[in-house]
Every structure is written in C-alpha cells, then in structure tokens.
Length: 213
Ligand code: SAH
Image 1 (cartoon, rainbow, N blue to C red):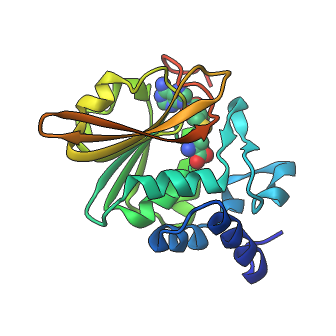
Image 2 (cartoon, rainbow, N blue to C red; image 1 turned 90 degrees about the horizontal axis):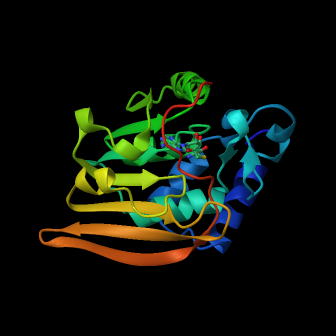
C-alpha cells in the first residue's frame, strides 16, 4: 500500500467527513505520508482512519483525531509549538508543516530515536524530538504559542499551563486513563485561562518519569 493518488483521496475524504475542514490542516495531512510512521503488519492499514499499535505498547492516533486536534490549535506560521507524546512522530510532522518550530518529547527513548529518523528522512528541519517527561514542560524552550498533549492527564498539567504564552492555546485530553476522556481546549488570557470541551476521545495515559526503553 502506498500513499498514491487514490489512497490520498480516500484519506482526505475520511478526514473531511469527520469534521476536519481547515484547508491548511488538510494540505499538511495530504503531504505527510502516514505510512512512514507505521511499521510491520499494520503498515498496510496506515491510510485507514483508525489508531494503530506502534513500538513500546503505544499507539499512533486516529488521523481524524490528529486533524481535529491540529485544527483546534489554530496554528499560525510564526508559532512555536510543543507536543507532549511524540509516539510515532506523525502528529509532530503535521505540526511541522504548519508552525515555525516544533519541539516534541516522549518518555520512551526508542520512540524518540525512531521518530527522529523519520523526520530526517522527510527533511523536516524545524522539528526537534527529546526524550523527557513532558508533564514537567520544556523550560529551556518556553514559552510556547501552542501546546498539544497527546496522552491523557487527569487535569491540564500545571507546568504546561505555565509555559503557555498569553494568547496561546493548549489542547489536551483530560480524564481517567481507562475511561473515555474529554478533549479540552485551553486559551490563556491576560487574566487567566478559558476552558472549552471539544469532544470525547481515548488516549494512552500521561505517565510520570522516563521509561527504560
Ligand atoms: N502523537 C503520537 C501519539 C502519541 S501516543 C503520534 O502522532 O504518533 C502517546 C505518547 O505519549 C506515547 O508515546 C507515550 O510514551 C507518551 N507519553 C506518556 N506520558 C508521557 C510523559 N509524561 N512525557 C512524555 N511523553 C509521554
């Protein structure tokens, strides 16, 4: 299976039918081949609108969820973006086509190494991946215009709220790890934060500390 004209058309059709309508987001998702981020027996399902298993017992998110989260971030080409939960690197690659600079972190060293290799192969020069516990933020590069968390937290993590610039937007799935969670859009104002519930989602949990692999 390759990301040829026909699979691209079906992929985009599925995105649109799930509510991904932002032209820049659709263009980015048309450009980045999801098949590069999925390995082994699941590679042939890369263009279906479903989450798939990746290494370290993690998952690459469903494309329509990637699209809806990216759309909710309202990224401008000048933005510096932080993603927590690199996973396969697919979401970060989409962000890299829309933003000026993308930092992405994962607690699994192996996932970071594999994602870096794909970023290099695709010549995505504005995305940097680190092995780190993202729940503490990324102080060296803060503040951020946009923050995307792709693992579920019980509450929006305080250190991440603190690293969001005034006027900035954070999108984060919130809720218990094994139940349905709610995708929340947080907007920072001069005087505080606004919280908007977007839709139910299901993500792997945001865990403390680094993994051993
Ligand atoms: N955005 C990814 C999918 C993420 S799956 C993609 O496009 O493929 C969620 C990821 O969050 C997993 O890889 C998991 O290792 C990571 N994660 C969980 N807790 C974390 C933490 N505290 N810091 C950094 N990464 C974390």
